[in-house]
Length: 218
Image 1 (cartoon, rainbow, N blue to C red):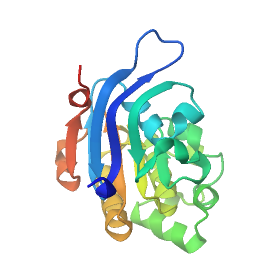
Image 2 (image 1 turned 120 degrees about the vertical axis):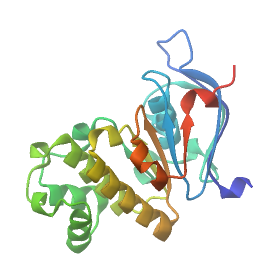
Image 3 (image 1 turned 60 degrees about the horizontal axis):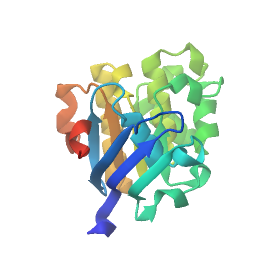
Image 4 (image 1 turned 120 degrees about the horizontal axis):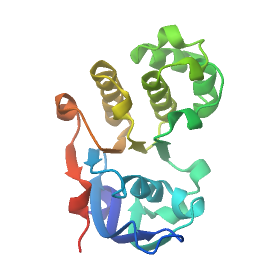
């Protein structure tokens, strides 16, 4: 049933104004509420562009031509203002998304959560000792965990992740997935992640993986 789908894309085609060819065309995808789906595929196949469309970044912020159907949480994606949408997005460039303040200040600022909530999630992710450090001083992996914490503290209904797990070692990846699983159980969170690589040791913690190229029909 459509009401049980978090994401419905049907015959979706996206083309940037400066490009003579679409990034992808006739793409179809269904993600059920509460699922955790990982899309994998080679660099440049359109994975990030798809996330931008689902998040509403395309065409509201990044101009592009969109054809076909794209519904998110039962609504046309164009009806979600990015600033107040039920969607959280973790971009590939983590450092560009985090202000140059302490880890704790970042999480309070970005999520509106209380200090106690922030302290709890930092401890769950093994970042308690980094709470007072400025984010730019953290490793790329720890910055990714901070971005994940900020996203989950907002209690979104849909979490989009762009190549974040490539920044994490196996232990950090497992901690991240455990926290995501907790949010899925408590808030019926749906997760769509795109990765060019995802550790096989962690695939038992997600719903399914899909080859991005299998979504496109010629």
